[in-house]
Picture 1 (cartoon, protein in one colour):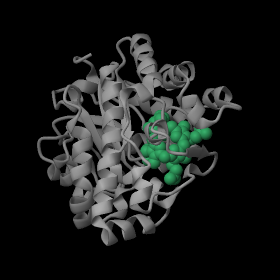
Picture 2 (tube, protein in one colour):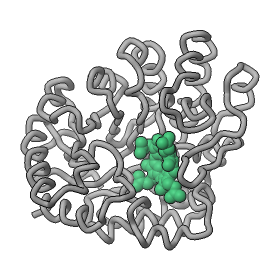
Picture 3 (cartoon, rainbow, N blue to C red):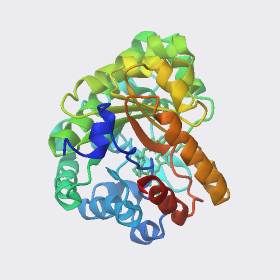
Picture 4 (tube, rainbow, N blue to C red):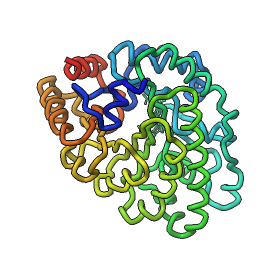
Length: 334
Ligand code: 1CP
Protein backbone atom coordinates (compact mmCIF):
# COMPACT_ATOMS: atom_id res chain seq x y z
CA UNK A 1 0.00 0.00 0.00
CA UNK A 2 3.04 2.27 0.32
CA UNK A 3 2.93 2.85 -3.41
CA UNK A 4 -0.65 4.16 -3.47
CA UNK A 5 -1.12 7.63 -4.92
CA UNK A 6 -2.48 8.80 -1.56
CA UNK A 7 0.51 7.65 0.48
CA UNK A 8 2.98 9.01 -2.08
CA UNK A 9 1.31 12.44 -2.08
CA UNK A 10 1.18 12.44 1.73
CA UNK A 11 4.91 11.70 1.82
CA UNK A 12 5.62 14.55 -0.59
CA UNK A 13 6.75 12.23 -3.38
CA UNK A 14 6.05 13.34 -6.95
CA UNK A 15 2.70 12.15 -8.36
CA UNK A 16 1.24 12.47 -11.85
CA UNK A 17 -1.94 14.04 -10.38
CA UNK A 18 -3.30 14.65 -6.87
CA UNK A 19 -5.18 11.76 -5.25
CA UNK A 20 -8.78 12.74 -4.46
CA UNK A 21 -11.18 11.86 -1.64
CA UNK A 22 -13.81 13.88 0.24
CA UNK A 23 -14.19 14.46 3.95
CA UNK A 24 -17.56 13.01 4.99
CA UNK A 25 -17.86 11.17 1.67
CA UNK A 26 -19.53 8.29 3.51
CA UNK A 27 -23.06 8.93 4.68
CA UNK A 28 -24.53 12.39 4.35
CA UNK A 29 -25.63 12.90 0.76
CA UNK A 30 -25.78 9.27 -0.41
CA UNK A 31 -29.28 7.75 -0.87
CA UNK A 32 -27.86 4.23 -0.49
CA UNK A 33 -26.49 5.31 2.91
CA UNK A 34 -29.82 6.72 4.09
CA UNK A 35 -31.55 3.51 3.04
CA UNK A 36 -29.11 1.27 4.91
CA UNK A 37 -29.27 3.42 8.07
CA UNK A 38 -33.10 3.39 8.26
CA UNK A 39 -34.10 2.47 11.82
CA UNK A 40 -30.50 2.02 13.06
CA UNK A 41 -29.15 4.70 15.45
CA UNK A 42 -25.88 6.28 14.27
CA UNK A 43 -23.64 4.93 17.02
CA UNK A 44 -25.15 1.46 16.75
CA UNK A 45 -24.31 1.42 13.03
CA UNK A 46 -20.70 2.27 13.97
CA UNK A 47 -20.52 -0.86 16.19
CA UNK A 48 -21.73 -3.21 13.45
CA UNK A 49 -18.86 -4.30 11.18
CA UNK A 50 -21.26 -5.31 8.38
CA UNK A 51 -22.68 -1.77 8.26
CA UNK A 52 -19.31 -0.04 8.73
CA UNK A 53 -17.82 -2.02 5.84
CA UNK A 54 -20.75 -1.40 3.50
CA UNK A 55 -21.03 2.35 4.26
CA UNK A 56 -17.27 2.85 3.89
CA UNK A 57 -17.35 1.10 0.51
CA UNK A 58 -20.40 2.97 -0.87
CA UNK A 59 -18.58 6.18 -1.88
CA UNK A 60 -15.61 4.21 -3.23
CA UNK A 61 -17.93 2.31 -5.56
CA UNK A 62 -19.94 5.37 -6.56
CA UNK A 63 -17.15 7.92 -7.02
CA UNK A 64 -14.00 5.86 -7.61
CA UNK A 65 -12.15 8.05 -5.11
CA UNK A 66 -8.46 7.34 -4.44
CA UNK A 67 -9.05 6.60 -0.73
CA UNK A 68 -11.76 5.35 1.59
CA UNK A 69 -12.48 7.09 4.90
CA UNK A 70 -13.44 4.73 7.71
CA UNK A 71 -17.12 5.06 8.64
CA UNK A 72 -17.28 5.88 12.34
CA UNK A 73 -17.51 9.03 14.45
CA UNK A 74 -15.20 11.05 16.68
CA UNK A 75 -17.31 10.11 19.74
CA UNK A 76 -17.17 6.33 19.14
CA UNK A 77 -14.04 5.81 21.30
CA UNK A 78 -15.33 7.90 24.23
CA UNK A 79 -18.60 5.96 24.07
CA UNK A 80 -16.52 2.74 24.17
CA UNK A 81 -14.99 3.87 27.50
CA UNK A 82 -18.50 4.15 28.96
CA UNK A 83 -19.32 7.84 28.46
CA UNK A 84 -23.08 8.25 27.92
CA UNK A 85 -23.13 9.92 24.49
CA UNK A 86 -25.63 9.62 21.66
CA UNK A 87 -25.82 11.15 18.22
CA UNK A 88 -29.18 12.80 17.87
CA UNK A 89 -30.47 13.10 14.29
CA UNK A 90 -30.24 16.66 13.05
CA UNK A 91 -28.23 17.72 16.14
CA UNK A 92 -25.00 15.74 16.54
CA UNK A 93 -23.28 14.27 19.60
CA UNK A 94 -25.12 14.87 22.90
CA UNK A 95 -23.41 13.99 26.20
CA UNK A 96 -25.79 13.11 29.07
CA UNK A 97 -23.48 14.32 31.86
CA UNK A 98 -21.18 17.10 30.65
CA UNK A 99 -17.64 17.22 32.06
CA UNK A 100 -17.06 20.37 34.13
CA UNK A 101 -15.35 19.25 37.35
CA UNK A 102 -12.51 16.96 38.37
CA UNK A 103 -15.04 14.39 39.60
CA UNK A 104 -16.62 14.43 36.11
CA UNK A 105 -13.20 13.84 34.53
CA UNK A 106 -12.41 10.97 36.88
CA UNK A 107 -15.42 9.09 35.51
CA UNK A 108 -13.73 8.87 32.11
CA UNK A 109 -11.32 5.94 31.95
CA UNK A 110 -8.59 5.33 29.36
CA UNK A 111 -9.45 3.36 26.20
CA UNK A 112 -8.15 -0.20 25.90
CA UNK A 113 -7.84 -1.72 22.41
CA UNK A 114 -10.23 -4.49 23.53
CA UNK A 115 -12.97 -1.88 24.05
CA UNK A 116 -13.10 -1.42 20.29
CA UNK A 117 -12.77 -4.97 18.92
CA UNK A 118 -15.53 -4.04 16.46
CA UNK A 119 -13.19 -1.41 14.99
CA UNK A 120 -10.37 -3.92 14.52
CA UNK A 121 -12.75 -6.35 12.84
CA UNK A 122 -14.23 -3.65 10.56
CA UNK A 123 -10.82 -2.31 9.48
CA UNK A 124 -9.46 -5.81 8.82
CA UNK A 125 -12.43 -6.72 6.62
CA UNK A 126 -12.27 -3.38 4.84
CA UNK A 127 -8.60 -3.50 3.99
CA UNK A 128 -9.22 -6.93 2.42
CA UNK A 129 -12.24 -5.73 0.43
CA UNK A 130 -10.68 -2.45 -0.66
CA UNK A 131 -7.79 -4.13 -2.47
CA UNK A 132 -5.54 -1.38 -3.84
CA UNK A 133 -7.61 1.51 -2.44
CA UNK A 134 -6.06 2.79 0.80
CA UNK A 135 -8.17 3.19 3.93
CA UNK A 136 -7.83 6.39 6.00
CA UNK A 137 -8.43 5.91 9.71
CA UNK A 138 -9.38 8.93 11.83
CA UNK A 139 -10.03 10.34 15.25
CA UNK A 140 -11.26 13.59 16.76
CA UNK A 141 -8.56 15.90 18.10
CA UNK A 142 -8.61 16.50 21.86
CA UNK A 143 -9.98 20.05 21.63
CA UNK A 144 -12.90 19.19 19.33
CA UNK A 145 -13.86 16.08 21.35
CA UNK A 146 -13.46 17.94 24.66
CA UNK A 147 -15.75 20.68 23.37
CA UNK A 148 -18.59 18.13 23.08
CA UNK A 149 -17.77 16.71 26.52
CA UNK A 150 -17.71 20.11 28.23
CA UNK A 151 -20.59 21.78 26.38
CA UNK A 152 -22.72 18.61 26.42
CA UNK A 153 -23.41 18.92 22.68
CA UNK A 154 -22.71 20.99 19.57
CA UNK A 155 -21.84 24.58 20.39
CA UNK A 156 -21.55 27.79 18.41
CA UNK A 157 -19.28 29.74 20.75
CA UNK A 158 -17.61 26.99 22.85
CA UNK A 159 -18.04 29.32 25.80
CA UNK A 160 -18.00 26.75 28.63
CA UNK A 161 -14.98 25.07 27.05
CA UNK A 162 -13.03 28.33 26.83
CA UNK A 163 -14.09 29.35 30.33
CA UNK A 164 -12.84 26.02 31.71
CA UNK A 165 -9.47 26.14 29.90
CA UNK A 166 -8.71 29.60 31.26
CA UNK A 167 -10.23 29.23 34.75
CA UNK A 168 -8.85 25.80 35.62
CA UNK A 169 -5.86 25.06 33.37
CA UNK A 170 -4.85 22.00 35.45
CA UNK A 171 -8.22 20.34 34.99
CA UNK A 172 -8.22 21.37 31.33
CA UNK A 173 -4.81 19.81 30.65
CA UNK A 174 -5.79 16.60 32.48
CA UNK A 175 -9.01 16.40 30.46
CA UNK A 176 -7.18 16.92 27.18
CA UNK A 177 -4.51 14.39 28.13
CA UNK A 178 -7.27 11.84 28.79
CA UNK A 179 -8.95 12.53 25.44
CA UNK A 180 -5.53 12.37 23.73
CA UNK A 181 -5.02 8.88 25.18
CA UNK A 182 -8.46 7.81 23.95
CA UNK A 183 -8.19 9.32 20.44
CA UNK A 184 -4.55 8.20 20.16
CA UNK A 185 -5.41 4.59 21.02
CA UNK A 186 -8.34 4.74 18.58
CA UNK A 187 -5.90 5.76 15.80
CA UNK A 188 -3.38 3.08 16.77
CA UNK A 189 -6.05 0.36 16.70
CA UNK A 190 -7.02 1.39 13.15
CA UNK A 191 -3.38 1.43 11.99
CA UNK A 192 -2.66 -1.96 13.61
CA UNK A 193 -5.68 -3.40 11.75
CA UNK A 194 -4.50 -2.09 8.37
CA UNK A 195 -5.30 1.61 7.83
CA UNK A 196 -2.84 3.18 5.34
CA UNK A 197 -3.03 6.75 6.69
CA UNK A 198 -4.81 8.62 9.47
CA UNK A 199 -6.50 11.98 9.80
CA UNK A 200 -6.93 13.91 13.02
CA UNK A 201 -10.02 16.16 12.81
CA UNK A 202 -9.83 19.37 14.85
CA UNK A 203 -12.94 20.83 13.28
CA UNK A 204 -13.58 23.48 15.92
CA UNK A 205 -9.99 24.61 16.67
CA UNK A 206 -10.64 27.73 14.58
CA UNK A 207 -12.66 29.06 17.54
CA UNK A 208 -9.33 29.59 19.35
CA UNK A 209 -6.64 32.24 19.14
CA UNK A 210 -3.15 31.22 18.13
CA UNK A 211 -1.94 31.69 21.71
CA UNK A 212 -4.75 29.55 23.11
CA UNK A 213 -4.09 26.83 20.55
CA UNK A 214 -0.38 26.80 21.34
CA UNK A 215 -0.78 26.65 25.11
CA UNK A 216 -3.96 24.65 25.66
CA UNK A 217 -4.26 22.35 22.64
CA UNK A 218 -1.07 21.73 20.65
CA UNK A 219 0.70 19.51 23.23
CA UNK A 220 -2.32 17.20 23.38
CA UNK A 221 -2.83 16.95 19.62
CA UNK A 222 0.90 16.21 19.38
CA UNK A 223 0.53 13.43 21.98
CA UNK A 224 -2.41 11.97 20.03
CA UNK A 225 -0.40 11.86 16.81
CA UNK A 226 2.86 10.71 18.42
CA UNK A 227 1.54 7.15 18.82
CA UNK A 228 1.21 6.77 15.06
CA UNK A 229 4.62 6.12 13.52
CA UNK A 230 4.17 3.87 10.50
CA UNK A 231 1.65 5.64 8.26
CA UNK A 232 1.20 9.25 7.06
CA UNK A 233 -0.68 11.62 9.33
CA UNK A 234 -3.08 14.31 8.10
CA UNK A 235 -3.98 17.07 10.57
CA UNK A 236 -7.08 19.08 9.69
CA UNK A 237 -8.76 22.11 11.20
CA UNK A 238 -11.35 24.66 10.06
CA UNK A 239 -10.53 28.34 10.43
CA UNK A 240 -6.95 27.51 11.44
CA UNK A 241 -5.10 29.45 8.70
CA UNK A 242 -3.64 31.88 11.26
CA UNK A 243 -1.82 29.05 13.04
CA UNK A 244 -1.30 26.51 10.27
CA UNK A 245 2.40 26.03 11.19
CA UNK A 246 1.27 24.86 14.65
CA UNK A 247 -0.86 22.11 13.10
CA UNK A 248 2.27 20.98 11.26
CA UNK A 249 4.33 21.23 14.44
CA UNK A 250 1.89 18.90 16.21
CA UNK A 251 3.24 16.11 14.03
CA UNK A 252 1.51 16.17 10.66
CA UNK A 253 2.92 14.95 7.36
CA UNK A 254 -0.02 16.63 5.65
CA UNK A 255 -1.76 19.81 6.76
CA UNK A 256 -5.49 20.05 5.95
CA UNK A 257 -6.52 23.48 4.70
CA UNK A 258 -10.04 24.92 4.61
CA UNK A 259 -11.32 27.01 1.67
CA UNK A 260 -10.28 30.35 3.18
CA UNK A 261 -6.60 30.11 2.26
CA UNK A 262 -5.23 29.36 -1.23
CA UNK A 263 -3.06 26.23 -1.20
CA UNK A 264 0.02 28.01 -2.56
CA UNK A 265 -0.11 30.38 0.41
CA UNK A 266 -0.74 27.41 2.75
CA UNK A 267 2.32 25.69 1.27
CA UNK A 268 4.43 28.77 2.07
CA UNK A 269 3.21 28.65 5.68
CA UNK A 270 4.12 24.96 6.19
CA UNK A 271 7.33 24.47 4.20
CA UNK A 272 8.25 20.87 3.47
CA UNK A 273 4.79 19.48 4.26
CA UNK A 274 2.14 18.17 1.93
CA UNK A 275 -1.24 19.93 1.93
CA UNK A 276 -4.81 18.66 1.63
CA UNK A 277 -7.82 20.57 0.39
CA UNK A 278 -9.54 22.82 -0.29
CA UNK A 279 -12.68 23.25 -2.42
CA UNK A 280 -15.44 25.13 -0.59
CA UNK A 281 -18.14 22.43 -0.07
CA UNK A 282 -20.86 25.05 -0.64
CA UNK A 283 -19.63 25.62 -4.20
CA UNK A 284 -20.57 22.05 -5.13
CA UNK A 285 -24.10 23.49 -5.38
CA UNK A 286 -23.01 26.07 -7.99
CA UNK A 287 -23.04 25.60 -11.78
CA UNK A 288 -20.57 23.02 -13.10
CA UNK A 289 -18.52 25.71 -14.90
CA UNK A 290 -17.86 27.29 -11.48
CA UNK A 291 -16.90 23.97 -9.88
CA UNK A 292 -14.62 23.04 -12.76
CA UNK A 293 -12.76 26.37 -12.64
CA UNK A 294 -12.32 26.05 -8.84
CA UNK A 295 -11.01 22.48 -9.13
CA UNK A 296 -8.49 23.56 -11.81
CA UNK A 297 -7.35 26.51 -9.69
CA UNK A 298 -6.88 24.31 -6.62
CA UNK A 299 -4.96 21.62 -8.52
CA UNK A 300 -2.66 24.34 -9.93
CA UNK A 301 -2.12 26.00 -6.55
CA UNK A 302 -1.51 22.61 -4.90
CA UNK A 303 1.60 22.17 -7.08
CA UNK A 304 3.35 24.69 -4.81
CA UNK A 305 3.51 22.02 -2.07
CA UNK A 306 5.70 18.88 -2.10
CA UNK A 307 2.48 16.83 -2.14
CA UNK A 308 -1.21 17.64 -2.63
CA UNK A 309 -4.21 15.53 -1.64
CA UNK A 310 -7.31 16.96 -3.31
CA UNK A 311 -10.25 17.32 -0.93
CA UNK A 312 -12.92 19.76 0.14
CA UNK A 313 -12.16 22.52 2.64
CA UNK A 314 -14.58 20.81 5.09
CA UNK A 315 -17.07 17.94 4.89
CA UNK A 316 -19.57 17.21 2.11
CA UNK A 317 -22.80 19.08 2.87
CA UNK A 318 -25.93 16.91 3.14
CA UNK A 319 -27.56 18.88 0.28
CA UNK A 320 -24.80 17.96 -2.21
CA UNK A 321 -25.77 16.17 -5.41
CA UNK A 322 -23.63 12.98 -5.53
CA UNK A 323 -23.35 13.32 -9.33
CA UNK A 324 -21.35 16.53 -8.88
CA UNK A 325 -18.84 14.73 -6.64
CA UNK A 326 -18.57 11.96 -9.23
CA UNK A 327 -17.86 14.60 -11.88
CA UNK A 328 -15.15 16.25 -9.74
CA UNK A 329 -13.39 12.88 -9.36
CA UNK A 330 -13.65 12.21 -13.10
CA UNK A 331 -12.26 15.67 -13.89
CA UNK A 332 -9.25 15.22 -11.59
CA UNK A 333 -8.52 11.64 -12.59
CA UNK A 334 -8.85 12.60 -16.28
O1 1CP B 1 -27.55 9.92 11.17
C1 1CP B 1 -26.52 10.30 10.58
O2 1CP B 1 -26.31 10.04 9.39
C2 1CP B 1 -25.56 11.01 11.43
C3 1CP B 1 -24.65 11.91 10.69
C4 1CP B 1 -23.22 11.54 10.99
C5 1CP B 1 -22.33 10.79 10.18
C6 1CP B 1 -22.61 10.15 8.84
C7 1CP B 1 -22.54 11.90 12.15
C8 1CP B 1 -23.10 12.64 13.30
N1 1CP B 1 -21.25 11.39 12.07
C9 1CP B 1 -21.09 10.71 10.88
C10 1CP B 1 -19.89 9.98 10.41
C11 1CP B 1 -18.58 10.66 10.52
N2 1CP B 1 -18.28 11.63 11.44
C12 1CP B 1 -17.41 10.36 9.78
C13 1CP B 1 -17.26 9.21 8.79
C14 1CP B 1 -17.85 9.48 7.48
C15 1CP B 1 -17.01 10.24 6.48
O3 1CP B 1 -16.13 11.05 6.84
O4 1CP B 1 -17.19 10.04 5.28
C16 1CP B 1 -16.41 11.23 10.21
C17 1CP B 1 -15.00 11.34 9.68
C18 1CP B 1 -16.97 12.00 11.25
C19 1CP B 1 -16.19 12.97 12.03
C20 1CP B 1 -16.89 13.98 12.85
N3 1CP B 1 -17.96 13.82 13.67
C21 1CP B 1 -16.41 15.29 13.00
C22 1CP B 1 -15.17 15.83 12.34
C23 1CP B 1 -15.41 16.08 10.89
C24 1CP B 1 -16.22 17.29 10.53
O5 1CP B 1 -17.10 17.17 9.67
O6 1CP B 1 -15.92 18.39 11.06
C25 1CP B 1 -17.25 15.96 13.88
C26 1CP B 1 -17.15 17.39 14.35
C27 1CP B 1 -18.24 15.01 14.31
C28 1CP B 1 -19.32 15.24 15.27
C29 1CP B 1 -20.62 14.98 14.62
N4 1CP B 1 -21.10 13.72 14.41
C30 1CP B 1 -22.30 13.81 13.75
C31 1CP B 1 -22.57 15.19 13.53
C32 1CP B 1 -23.80 15.71 12.85
C33 1CP B 1 -21.51 15.91 14.06
C34 1CP B 1 -21.31 17.42 14.01
C35 1CP B 1 -22.27 18.12 14.93
C36 1CP B 1 -21.89 19.57 15.20
O7 1CP B 1 -22.19 20.42 14.36
O8 1CP B 1 -21.27 19.83 16.25
